[in-house]
Image (cartoon, rainbow, N blue to C red):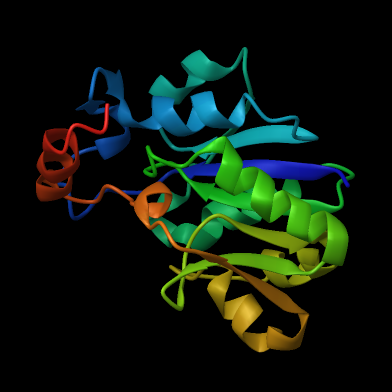
Length: 191
């Protein structure tokens, strides 16, 4: 199946107080990690939805979609990614602040999606995580989101058409939101 990957990098970093995606994290800026990982995978399309001109430097590796309405919340990125997904079978939404996300996790999710063609959600200890894959049949629902609301609203309405994939290791799903997160995970020597 053809899957479009959408990296959502339009957040306002309110908990950080500055654009966390451009901060040094173990020798690279934070957004480098997810982009480097995703360019190793054969996606139908690879998009970055962003409000930051600094992300344009990756335009040779992925398609940049400008989000001038990031103040409207996460739905603005979901809508732009969905509108630019092309003729695909599924859309996989990534947050840009998961530096430990890896190819093995992504490929396990894609494999499940390929077999079942359902909304595919990773879980750790019963808690849903990102990234999530939506079959293209949910395109209109994704486009109807508003405010600071993402795809969770959709898969909660369609639990019978949602496949939860269990992972035992939380590490790939760690997201970096605060200065404390930066210090905690760099100091653990993960790089």
